[in-house]
Length: 399
Ligand SMILES: *Cc1c(COP(=O)(O)O)cnc(C)c1O
Image 1: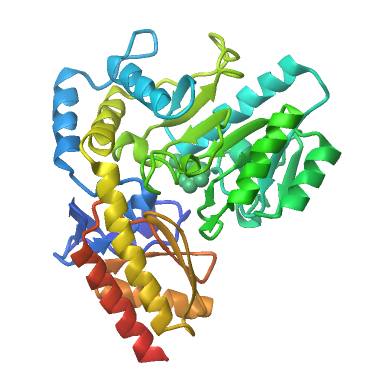
Image 2 (image 1 turned 180 degrees about the vertical axis):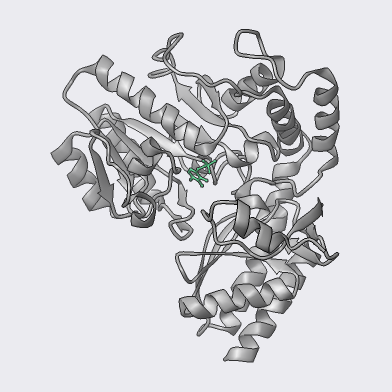
């Protein structure tokens, strides 16, 4: 039998710590490995497969667009992508879309667009305010805005100033904005790899207020929180504010690479022919799948269904927290983006992940001790019960 683990180590650069499972098939909310073992998928390719795997509407779009054409180029009009852009704009802010292939490319486009904005404004404002422990991607431009030392410390830092603020520290935010006169605030509405840390209503409101008063751009990185994950198409829509720019990726291509930005009226005019671009994006196939995802979410009740499934999961988690207060400190997040902040040591958290894996349940661990759940919106109450039962049994075995 093929030893995928050994071959992976021999032929692929070691940029990730992998779980030793080779996937053969994925259907609904279940993964099948090459040995026939099944896993309940509670991290959905890191927030990509919002409708689970092989959703019929997504497969139908795959076949239809595959028969039509796979790739053209940006020299032509691209109907699936135009349609997707229209829908993203109509369900968010008044503006225009630029498509790339990934989250990092969405961040790069943001960096370049904000540079053009700074140049156009020419009023002495420069640089970005970002959150401590933020994550915005791994290309050079993106790591300069990512405040996790493990991600940026070995690489060159850019000229553009970057100011770090503790999430939810309103006073610190005000002070930096007054002292430094930045051009933009960039934030994830819920920090993802930073430990599933939601920004508070007060902090979000203050960000919007400061941006309005000081003429700064308000930029929301919705790469992980977007496309229905928190129960709305974009997570900032839980708050009363209107960003100038929204980054999206992960779930938007229905499982295929796609990302980009929605640029509001203040900045949408700034990219002119030649300013930015890429060969592959927007892939007509990714865009067709994206349209299928939006069909399900916006027109066939997918968002509501996701909210109901998430409510059930949250209720069970709160119960679990009450039963094991010494294990579960707090459950944070919104909808199907959940951080179970455990009182475990990092080593124990890893053991828990391994144990759940053996029981056929896939969860992610972030910031050492946080069980990060990014389940599909289609997670059924029965699947939730299975997960909770296993978690409970494990806690019982170690208290
Ligand atoms: C995943 C992620 C990115 C980077 O996206 P890639 O597609 O991996 O480049 C950026 N920002 C946030 C919030 C993310 O979760």
